[in-house]
Image (cartoon, rainbow, N blue to C red):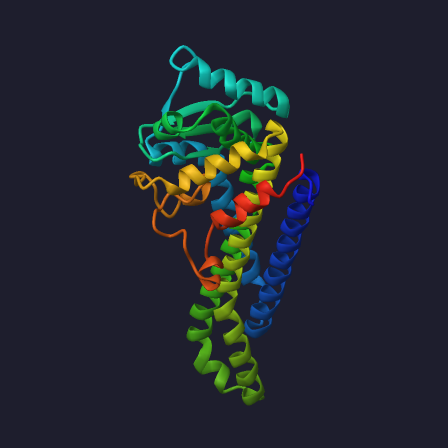
Length: 301
């Protein structure tokens, strides 16, 4: 039987494996495009542009997400029980107390954001506070604090940078290759270059798809890791397992949810998407609920 520690270590190893695959894909694609176009400037432009845009978003991500979700800050005197729960878990985790926000939504759910532990935010819906028992609420908060402690916001930014590099490189390739197509066809060795161009074209078309699949795989592994790390904080995996079951069964919609922020929530906020085929699971930001609950209940404290 897997322990909490071995489960966490397994997900860390899988995450790093995906990141290495991502880097290899990015480098290989950059080399291929540079070779086909005879210039390395495309690679440098894509890298610099993606890093600038992504890190600017990362720096202000908490403010953007809170505004999109219409979250409101909560003072200690407004909900002292919630504050005490978060404070106790933060002491156990060894991280600073994050800012606490509430969403006036009936669906039980929660998310964490912020560029680091000193600028972190934990947001919970009113439905979460109303419907969960204390041990279940503790499990959800511990899961979100685990995201903060594991620096998932930073990792997500790195992944977004890599996806951005790939998307921008492929976009530049199509634009420039279309512009230069007539002149290339008139050069010597045009047939060999045409074959290389066709092979490269297939790879370049598939590259953004592979990049997004790797990004989603990393997101799912980080959810598993946050489940295990959160269970380590509470020493009670059953609390989070029961909370996940309750949240997933609740039919209430989350009006502020959208595709840009859905990956942040402890459970997919869009109802009716839980039962999916193996192919559809490849495009999910969260692991299936059955897998998460089974993993939690199979852990040995």
